[in-house]
Length: 400
Image (tube, rainbow, N blue to C red; front, side, top):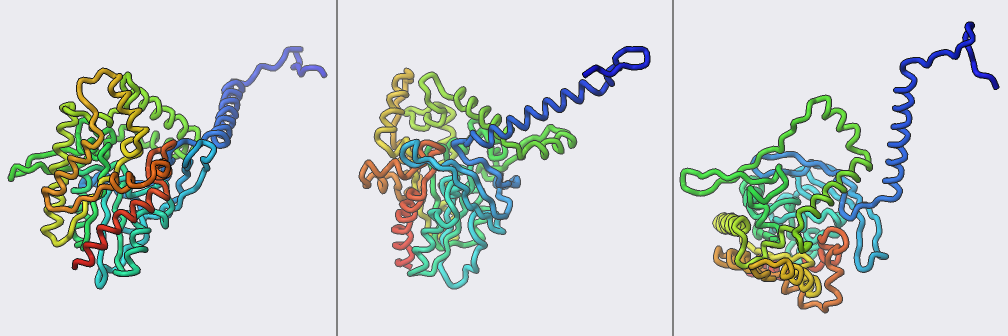
C-alpha cells in the first residue's frame, strides 16, 4: 500500500488540529480506562456520601430531603465477611432521617439527638436504633421517636439544634446521645476541621457565649463550579479524594500511630483539648437545663466507640500512647466521666452504653461496630443501643 502524495510528489502536511485532537482522544481513553478500573476494583472502607446538605448559619448543616441509596462496604468479623451493600437512607421534609413526623398530639414524643452514631448512615432506615426503639415503644405507649442525628456534630451543635428545631417540638423525653471520642473536639474552633460545622463564639450581653456557624468559602468561579458539576459523579474523582483524605489522616497521626482525637483521654489534657472539654460541658449543661425547664425529661446516653469499649483494642491503643513518650496518662473512661458529671449535675438521667455492652460476653463485642471500616454501630449494635435506651425511656413514660 503506497502513501498518498500531492501533485508535486510530496506528502500532505498534517492539519494543525491533528495532534491536539490525538492528544485529547488519548487522554479521554485513559480517563475512561481509569474510571472503569476504579468502578470494578475499588470499594472504599467508608460510605461514599451522595446525600446532600444545606448550610444553616444557626446549626451548621442540615439534610436535603429525599430518598438516597448510599454505597457502603459492610464488614463484620473477618475480612472475608465483607460485602458491598446499598443502604436505604431517607430524609424527611423536616431535614432529618426517617419518615415525616406524625402529629404529636395524643401520644408521647421521644426526640433523639446525636451525631453520625444516631444518624446511622451505614444501616437501612428500618434497622436504626431510633426506628427499633419506636417499634418497641409503640406497643405499650403508641410513642413516636424522632431521629435528629446529623453527622459531624458535637455537644455545641446539639444545643444549637435544640434551640432551632427541637424545643418547639416539646418532646416528652429528650435523649442526648454523646460520643466522647469527638463530641468535645467538635466544640472547638481550633480543633474542628469541617469548616461548615466549625463553631464561632461571641460574648452576649449577659456574659454567655453564643454560637454561630459560617459557610465554607467557595473561591471558585462560576465556570469552575459548572465544570465541577460534570466531574463530581466520577468514581475516579472520589477515589483520589479518598486517597487524599487517607494520606491526611495518616499525616495527622503522631509518631506512635495514634489519631489526634485520642488526646481527649489524656490526663492532664493538652490545653486545646481542655478548652474543648470545657466548652462541651457548658453547652451540654445549658441544653439539659433548658430542656428540663420546657417540660422535657432528659436522658444522656454515653456511646463508646470500639477502641474504648473492647479491652483488646484499648490495650493496644494505650500501649501505643505509652510508647510515644507522652508525659500524660491515657485514662479510658475520662470522656465518659466528664459527660456523666455534667449530665447528673444538670438534672439529667445518665445511661452508660459502655456498661451495657461490657455486660455482654467479650466475643460478642466486635459484632457491634464496623471495626474494619468506619467504627460506626452495626445492625446488631443499633439493636443493642435501642434496647439500652428503651429501658430508660420506659421507666420515664411509666412514671408519668
